[in-house]
Image 1 (cartoon, one colour):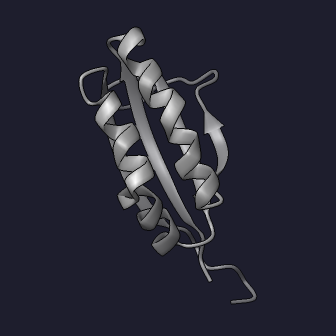
Image 2 (image 1 turned 60 degrees about the vertical axis):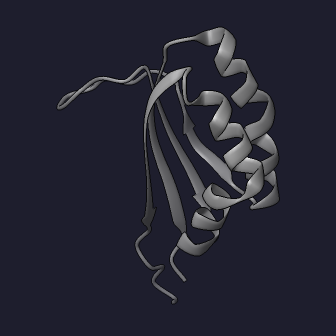
Length: 100
């Protein structure tokens, strides 16, 4: 089965308000076994609009990634970040493994 991924581009506009998101979001990622593959760090935007953070989170499937996003835990966190950042979040299915 193909993995599922969150690909998020984020620029924090209000660090103080964003702290509420940072407190709540980990519970959702833990519940759905999300694994961070990239989380900020050194990045270079070579095309398009630059964001300050790029995040990639791996899940067992696209369905699990979507379930995490729509969960009460994540929606509570999301409500804390709405006025604290600019964000684009895409959920994508990965390439199936060779033994699928």
